[in-house]
Length: 188
View 1 (cartoon, rainbow, N blue to C red):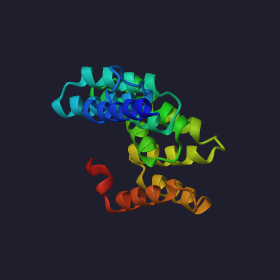
View 2 (view 1 turned 30 degrees about the horizontal axis):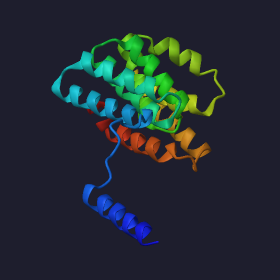
View 3 (view 1 turned 180 degrees about the horizontal axis):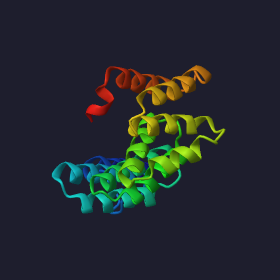
View 4 (view 1 turned 180 degrees about the vertical axis):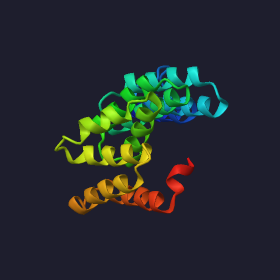
């Protein structure tokens, strides 16, 4: 008994003096790594290193596919492609972002700008005019605004807001309706 007590005391002293050593390996967490790559991409964008940013955003997407956060990564990648005037790739990115999370108004606005950059506004407008998808009305409204049809764009976006007053995206759409009305939409 005395021997067990001495052994226990020595063991406790060793634990408190030596401490616990953390293992030499790190737990791999793809979501955290994707977040880090996205942040690195944003840093590269600030520095004007767009090709490095593209690489980082692509890694973020590959590490964490199919989530709402991935929609943000696609949007960030689309912004870089737009800036580089690779509108075809920007369009693909914004469409992917919308497919993952259709309630972010910025994705529609940026997609419309990319169609304008590509020079395909009229063909896209004629295709969307026939659509019954409620979210296509948002894109259609922005396409009208980008083509210079301010009144038609406002009416289309306003129609969406009237039919879908409770969606998360509706307040964002209203914001851009007001910007279009006062002319500040075209300042960016």
